[in-house]
Amino acid sequence: MIVMSDLHNPVLDWFDEHARELPWRGNDASVWSVMVSEFMLQQTPVARVLPVHAQWLERWPTPAALAAEEPGEAVRAWGRLGYPRRALRLHAAATAIVEQHGGVVPDTYAELLGLPGVGDYTAAAIASFGYGRREVVLDTNVRRVFARALSGQEFPHTSVRKAERELATSLLPDDPPTAATWAVAVMELGALVCTASSPGCERCPIQDSCAWLAAGKPAWDGPARKAQTYAGTDRQVRGRLLAVLRDAPGAVPKARLDVVWSLAEQRERALESLVADGLVVRDGALYALP
DNA sequence: AAACCGTGGTA
DNA sequence: TTACCAAGGTT
Image (cartoon, rainbow, N blue to C red; front, side, top):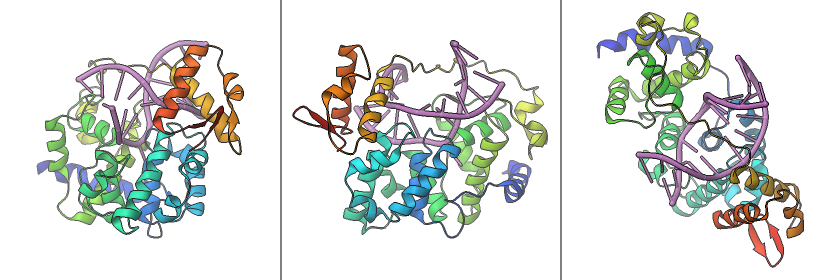
């Protein structure tokens, strides 16, 4: 591709100089460490993941170690990272790895995709970052970099379109190790420079070939990105209920859950949804983590 | 396909 | 203070 000489070397050189040193990167990091980080980083910033990731890897250094625990311990150790179903799914994925993959994190996209909580992005990320495979890694950072540099748009579409995936595929270097570095490099560029708001174009390694910058950084004219409300939602109630159970050593009487939210109907609905999700178990009038 | 699923930092 | 948003996945 023509664009390769314009984009690849500047991005790879920039990454070589500016990449963050993160615990799940580098030679001493296990694939399991990569996998745990990918689950935690789904919609949660790096800064908040760092301490919890360290605790998890110390406590559960292998999939088998986590699988041997009660799932509720994973939920408890998840702390306040948010979206606690990820903890449950990571525990389920560890169990599947033990039962179906001999305790070793699978090394192919297809097998990874079959694990609970692993979608397209996470499967590609583990295969690429963990095993150096050649995969198209499309996360929000990569998509934003490509949208700006190549399409001249401030933001990508809500969903990944066929043309977008084909474009990303065409940019992937042939050599697997180089492709893996390219994937993490573009992602890092999006995370540190080509950010959603206030991008640092003046320090961007590909500013000279960025379509969006060349066009004068036109404002996003696509559909408004929905502002997710939180206050007063079931999610907030679920969060409060689960916080009580996380902070309790064992089962708690329902009365202790009733005090977290005054609207009984919504409170009951939220509690039932937690039970339905497997995040909470009921034993008579007592509630606990699974 | 769109809604739902937590939490906390930042402008 | 509100709004945005941060390495998505599931239904």
